[in-house]
Image 1 (tube, one colour):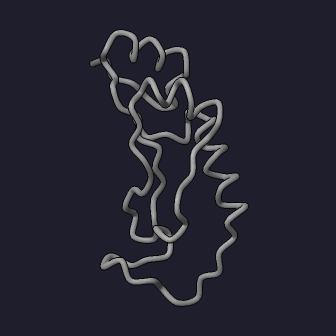
Image 2 (cartoon, rainbow, N blue to C red):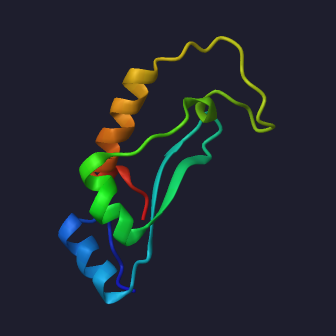
Length: 97
């Protein structure tokens, strides 16, 4: 595997998926403890569906401690959260490959 520096252009991702070098794409972001939270996609599904239409995620994962207990003091803004997650899916730089 070649040494790559993010962001990976979509065209290069497509080529790597076609060659079989990449088979999974992780769309993730860090929670309050720095753990990656998100989803894992089959690379072909990511290219065919997620880049075009976005995806969903649960903001609950951003408001829990390391033992998965809800932390006090958080209000949710679901529409904003889903817009940001959709935008991250459309922008390959939002993905950890």
